[in-house]
Image (cartoon, rainbow, N blue to C red; front, side):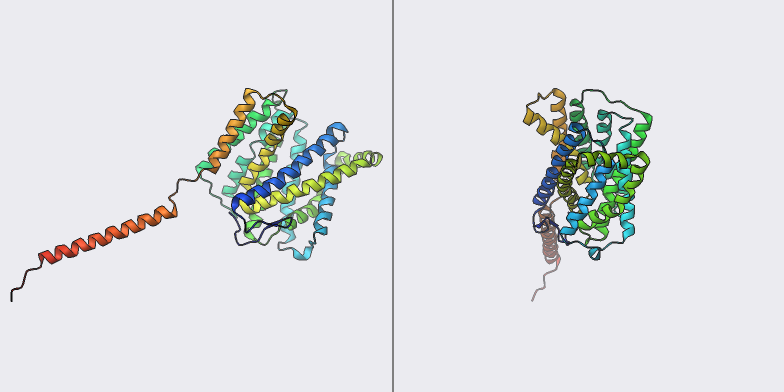
Length: 352
């Protein structure tokens, strides 16, 4: 676990004095809750109502984040990192969002899912080479990631009605988005590692303050700012849905940052990537859709990846090492005793 000496809280719940499995369960539960609600709201707004203004909705969402963080009592006086740290982070974040959204014009849904499902692998590679981290992952974790990614691709593509459609421009854009995603998680982990006093609220607050104005440029260039403003003004209840969605996503965001601070970017990437599979699986359970062989194969690979990740590494336990040391000490004492006896036997007897 990372940052053991730093007290971590998640919405008033102390994480530092709990075992790792409880920390993971609490943070993952907050993430899944927040983003499952986010998915339902996006389904309603984008598909049911036909409002597909992603940049504008992200912009509105940022102001809700700032309000919620301010209500919790956070101010810039509590910052422990310089603003330039969050400038770099926000640039990477905006590039990731922009490239991901832009790739949809050239790639269909199955193709994008195939690429986005591999997110955990570039996160691990970048974490291994980033100077401020230099994370060393055992082979077991790479095998686990490959099984997990393969299973997720199998499962999500089984739910698609069309085959992946590739375009050179789309592939370049989504690949660049994956690179930005891998740097994003590792940059956040590096900030938590280099300055353990960094809070989740500070990181989200500062990233939003710096990133929100950056969103204005693509909105103005594409004309989305004026179109979305007019549409939402004609249907003001959309803002109610967006605020509710932002409140739920806020819980998910803080939970994700808690996962990064405690468990690192690679583990968090596996959790966030698994959200799609969990969402699909819940839809099959709730709406009783039939599971195909490809679904089952994907679930099997995902399970194998998770189990292999949970298996202990092949390292001798402290008890075994201690037993070996005691045994070696006893052997050394026996050897010394034998040498002393041999010396006594060789010593000549002196007659009186």
